Length: 305
Image (tube, helix red, strand yellow):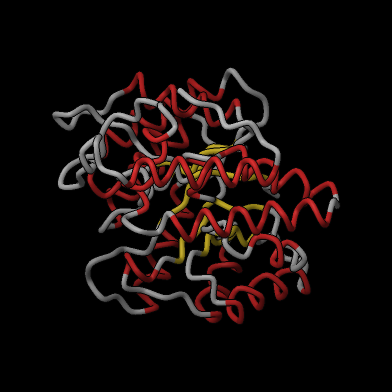
């Protein structure tokens, strides 16, 4: 079972839209050194749908190269594409690189039936010998998982599910049913929201966007939670929730770049059509003010670039 605070890490690009390998590797190192337990690569945050297969594979290679400097870091490439063929090709390439697992949203854009989605995941599971996770993200995929589909795929060998909608009824049922039946199936939160209460439901991992720009807060939250320090975990959770709410003023990828710049780090560029606000935009000062307040509440040092 994965027990860690992971990150849907952003990919850093040059101004003309090429992958900035040096800055992307720096960002991975920076997060690892601040306690992040693993990377969820080329998902929505990581601009996967905006990249070619070759570019995504290069990110997997960079992650593997970077993780060799650390112990126990988890690598989960997101390999989901609009079609089965490219999804399988990415999964096979990721497995060859030596990652821990792969994950995929259902084939998106088109509206697919349960039968089509089940077949998609069966082919993906059959294609590799590493764990395969489904990614429940209806907002981007136009598909919402149900318990009958989860049961079918769980029996076929699906390792678990990353869940972003945070529908408590569905999420709790998926987690508790697997526990009741002693099934090797893990629910991973696709957000930091809900972490503390869902930990008591048996959830042990989350893929938190905040780790891109404030890993110190998430690391302290997870440390206190696993240590059983109830009051400290609650305090960290409330700071996390406050910062998260404030940072939802724009797309999460853009917000991550902006927060890194607000801290004084050169976070490169997102890939167009995404655009960063100009450097003199007052929002950057607001962000650093939010971070200073949150870090001060927890007695954490706010490192500046």
